[in-house]
Length: 305
Image (tube, rainbow, N blue to C red; front, side, top):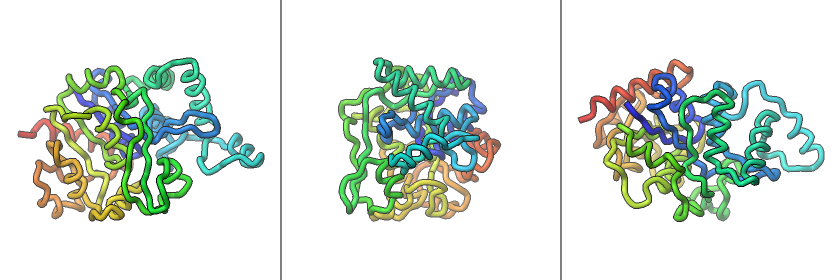
């Protein structure tokens, strides 16, 4: 079964890793959100791309889900000592990634080529694609003004009240080379348990600006019992006047979704969802959990009417 996975954030990276454990490289393409990319300390940083790649490579910090395992913090400590900004914590190994990415971008290489080379260096055999080589920037519209995503998410710690979102540059952004071909040959598209508003919507806007494919599209809800494991998705739903739930996630995607996977704690709520629904344990505490959820999702897809 050929799968395209759409991913962003820690939850998306975990399911992508689960799928990579059971699908051969030629059968899995992971398309990653780049709407939260930004420049900091003169470096081009791709947080979601790095989280997905580090996770697939076994290099991710197991405690945070982002950043590198066995990281050191000498550079950021000295930047802080010299009076520089320290609100976006960059470890020494992570900084090396950003320095090399920035160098290559300035030479004229594309983000997708750089990502491909990095994956090869890290031993990642499955295809990982940024959603676009053109910049798309997620702006969070809040009661304190419009904020670039990392300013809202990291610097302001998601405290401003959300009023909406926009994606600057999305109308001129083209899907990365290979993304359309992967979608055309896919048996299904899996939306990983990522934030619908800021991780998945930018990808959908780039990949499907006019219409959605006939390919089955399955989502895994990132909201369990009204809460998110990580990130501000539940807060965003609530501040936009939507009760945060697996049902809300299904309704967010309702125009094109074929089926949805929700957690067992939401089994009663699942009865209100109007599309095929798999109820199972979706919390991924271990690599085995990731592979199990991926396998159950593939089995669910195979049994869809």
